[in-house]
Amino acid sequence: MITEQIVERLKSIMGSENRVLLEKADLVSYSYDGSFGAYIPEIILQPVSTEEVAGIVKLANDMKIPVYPRGRGTSLSGGPLPVHGGMVLDFSRWTQKLIIDPEDTVAIVSPGVITADIDREAQRNGLMYPPDPSSSHVSTIGGNLAENAGGPRGLKYGVTKDYVLGLEIVTPEGDVIRTGGRTVKNVTGYDLTKLIVGSEGTLGIITEATLQLIPRPQATQTMMVIFDDIIDAGKAISAVLTSGILPSKMEIMDQASIRAVEEFQPIGLPIDVDAIILIELDGHPIAIRDESEQVKQVCLDVGARKAIIARDEESAENLWKARKLVSPAIVRKKPTKISEDATIPRSKIPEMFRRLQEIKAKYEIDLVVFGHAGDGNLHPNIIADKQDKEEMKRVEKAVAEIFTAAIELGGTLSGEHGIGTMKAPFMEMELGEAGLDMMKRMKKAWDPNNIMNPGKIFPETKGQKLVLVHD
Image 1 (spheres, rainbow, N blue to C red):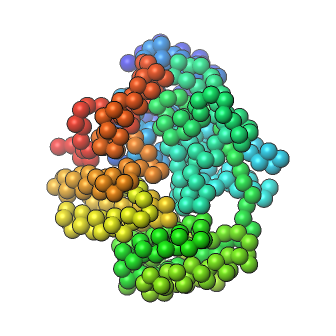
Image 2 (cartoon, one colour):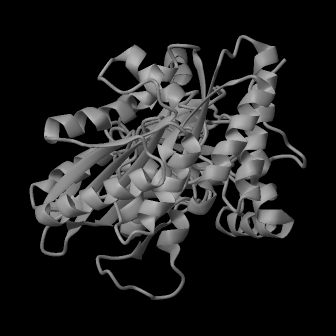
């Protein structure tokens, strides 16, 4: 319970009442994210310095008040939801530091910096920050670090953790520590940097990050490959990736997502197909011209109807625009979208497609499949109406079967969205009882009072089930 006395102490730490929010409308605004559920916090704080965060957390730990770090609220797994009330720390105003050091090829950033802005600034120096989640134009780097975000370029370049050299962290007890540094090589003790990245704010709060940048490719080439059978599309992905060529992106859209985009904002996609794959190659212009022809032939050899190489940059941008339009397009049919990102080994993509088709028919749900097919990171999205409780019960069962299918095929619950509240009930299914217990012990060691983003990652009760709509 946050008393008036605690509020006054927090205002003193912040040094500004303008960044301490208590109005009902503000509390409601911070009660939800891009996933499911709404939980009202007791107070919103908007820190813009490490000293403020350390002071807030030290007080919270002393008083055993839950602390929920938050960026722009784009999480699809419930990462920032204040499930036990307490205080939300909104980092969206902390954007003051975005330093590009071209000599060391690093970026040093505040947690509230928009992810796409880092790449944009790097580009001015001929460099690139590769992680590119679909929400990069609105999501913060702090949120991306907490969730270990990925994106289309993950196929060739990896995900967020692969570009983090060092962090400044406020621990759950209010201490400030630094992990890693500015060097590419660093094996001094345990790799706390990698531990924090992807820990979803449960082990500490990131207040600064040092990120690795790489040389920007000279050119890119995009193509669209059309398939009459989505199973053949899965086979084509494996065939391309064993051909000796590594694309920078391989994205898949099934028929439902293609039609949704064309109805939403027509750009000329073929709607009489089962699936399309969008492929981007990058590198030297002459090399990627030759590679494009090779990839085209590989796809045709495994059953593609047609492969179209974008004739210019505008055509390529149109194709990638189509991929980004899937999410807003599919919710026009029904208002509720459940976004998953079950990830499987690439060799199992055709089988996963088959399992998803069976689940769709079994539960009579609207299931749309798209995602980063090149690294096996599929996004099965279910479109429903949360007011229809009977339909939502079917959706809950379908989601459970999607996760079961992914794990049975040697995959994982999440490739980039994180666990949060949405996938916590399924953690033991993937990790086993001993594996889950080991993670809980690590959490207990870091955060003995369990104030740091409690209610995330771990199921709160034995046998906890996914509940999307309460009776």
